[in-house]
Length: 129
Image (cartoon, rainbow, N blue to C red; front, side, top):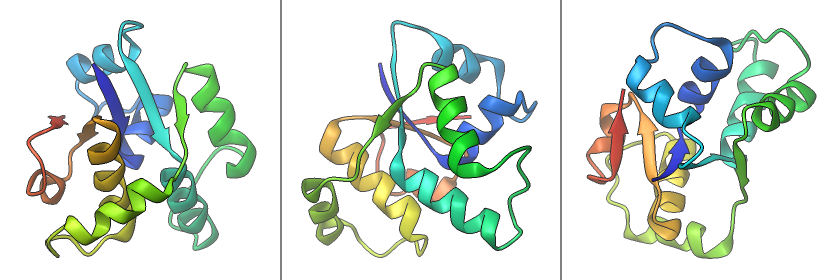
């Protein structure tokens, strides 16, 4: 399976948060799966950290990439083809970061791992936690 982690799922995974179901944690840690974190999630996390809405144990521009690498999660760059998918999306969700994750999942045939019900309105290709 090819998984794209929503930002909150990545943060729960690296922190061992109990809100992440064990079955989902197992899918993420299964080495047979390709697991990705979008640079969009890093962007979102940095903004939330700057606004004081995301406490982290260390500086996010170093901590988050280090955690991503430590857990064997690949980076998914933001590419032009993914951005172009925005035109295909109905305006069901106002969060620009989530909309971009949906576009990237569409472009790269990825399953989004999320708890966000609004993302489910766009695609059936979601692993819900």
